[in-house]
Amino acid sequence: MLFVLVSITATFLTVTGLSNSLNAVISSQRAQVAADAGALSCVIYGQDAVEQSVIKNNAMLISIIITANQCQVVAQFDGVSRDAFAMASSDSHLPTLQR
Image (cartoon, rainbow, N blue to C red; front, side, top):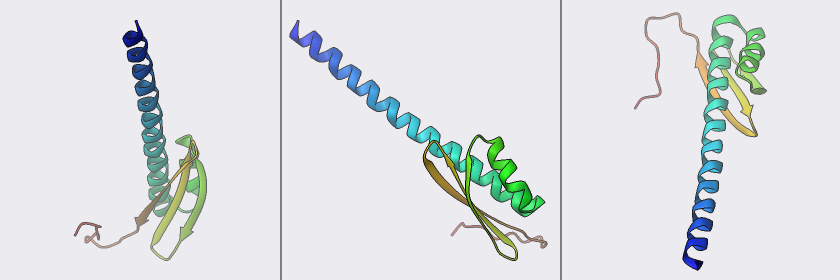
C-alpha cells in the first residue's frame, strides 16, 4: 500500500513539474513570436505598427529601439520577455546571423 501511495505522489510531482516547464516554454515561444512580428512590422510598416502587431499576438510591448535601418523590439508574454531584431535592406544582399 505504501508503495502505491509513493508511486502516485511521485507521478503527481513529475506531472506538475512537466506542466510548469511546458508553460514556461510556451510563454517563451509566444513572447518570441510577438517580438519577431513586431520587429518585422517595424521595418516594413514603421514604428506605429509595432504595438498593434505585438498586441495581436496577445503580448505586451516592453520597448522599441529604432536606428536608421534596424529595429529591436522587446515583447513580454506571461512574465517572459524576448527580443527580436529586424533590418531593412534595399539590396538583394541580406545579411544573416549565420557564421
